[in-house]
Length: 397
Image (cartoon, rainbow, N blue to C red):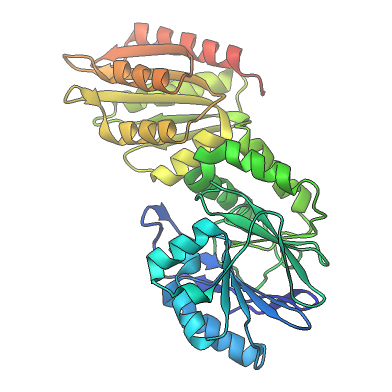
């Protein structure tokens, strides 16, 4: 475990998980993940900010005992109830039987529902209320639907430390360092984009409300429940979240395709080449049968252009591509320059299906093409036209 003092009497006490393959049973964790927990020590009371996943709670308790001495935890602040953070609550209250669980009304209801804890263990707080610890004051900021209805943030006023729940989090275990100033965090940026698009992406308007509520806080550290503690990069990270939650893309084009025997893949490769000839330099290509949905979602969310192609399969969109389109619809994707292409052997359905998804998402399709059986000269003409129309509509070059 990494034990690190962030500011005086505010400690990181989280744990790393390098064993779990998929976050939420869905999203790959090639670099692991951290479950971040924190201690705030006042002169009168001590608060534990969030716990950890149930399978790692013994590591947290052992480290609390061995590295921080005989501390007495008086409060367990629950910013987010997802079990990778709340799973350790039963073990913590068994270890510290005097501790009160601090949360809002919805949090308390969820704690009871998940862990069946008695009523006398709770301290209910509301938006803007404070919890004095003696020399440390925790102010609570309600941030519902980032990304569960009970989510909130906790702010230590004296030190400018914001405990942000899942907001500003990233996949990836911590490799010795804890604070961004202690490590190279460049690769965490990509993992933060992927985390946002996979987990939080649907809730942009609620993220915007949360950002508005924290605008007046003098934030010096952002302590999320996953990934590094942000300090040197606070303004940059908040800016990234602001853009993502406004669905503001970066320059680039993502091509998602499915192909059974290579014909649709040929179209995807030809489109990429035509885009490059026309000056597009940042092009991401995913074979939906091979790339994990997590990475396809991340690139599609991040970049301005999106081109999706699929063969017809049993009179439907090829299933891996359809799964991707469902993910886009679920995340209420916006502000995309979208084009589609479909292929078929004897009966066409794929391109029609892709256009129907675009209609559901209320995104205009700048061009679409359809190929029967294999590429010919007319297909290449259509590919060139599609590339022209995509590039003409890109605002970010």
